[in-house]
Length: 214
Image (tube, rainbow, N blue to C red; front, top):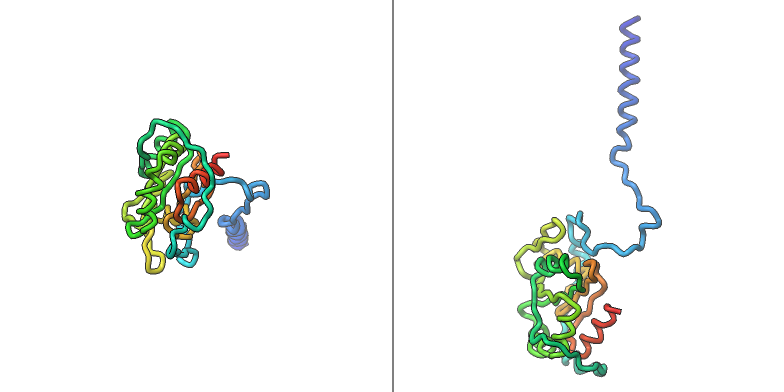
C-alpha cells in the first residue's frame, strides 16, 4: 500500500511538471501601442532577409528619364566642397556616432548605365556636392558586391535571390525592389525615411532630398 502511494504521488508530480512546461514556447504578441511605430529598418536581431519571392528586379531603359520630367527650379547652393566624399556603409555609421547627419546611400551596379551617367553629371554638380556635404554622409553601395557588411552586430552577406546574388542589407534597405540607380535616405537615427528610384538630374535630386530633411 505504501509503495502504491509513492507511485501515485510520483505520477501526479510528473503530470504537474509537464503541464508547467507546456507554455515554454509561447509567443507573446506585440502590444497595440507598438504597432506602427517608427523602427530601425534593419533590427539588430534580423537573421534572414526577405524571401526570394519578395525580390523584384527592375531596369531603367529607353529615353533618359531626366529628360521626361519638367525641371524644378532650385537656387544655387553655395559651399566649399569640391567633390562628394563617398564612404562605405560602416564608415558612415561610425561617423554618425560622432556627428549626426542624414545618410544618403547610392545603390549602383557596375553594369548600370544611368548610374555611370549620374557619376559623370549629377554628382559633379557644385550645388549637389555642397548640398550633400552639408546634410548627409554619402555612401556608395553595390548590392552585387561580395564584400560582407557589418551593422549592429549583424554580418550581412551576399545571398542568392533566384538567379541573382545581392547583399542582404541592400535587399532590406530597398525592401526587395532591386532597381538601379536607387537612393536610400536614412535619418540621423539611422532609420529609413524613403527611397528615390531612377536617374535624377541635379535639380531633381536636390528637390527630392529636401523633402526628407523637412
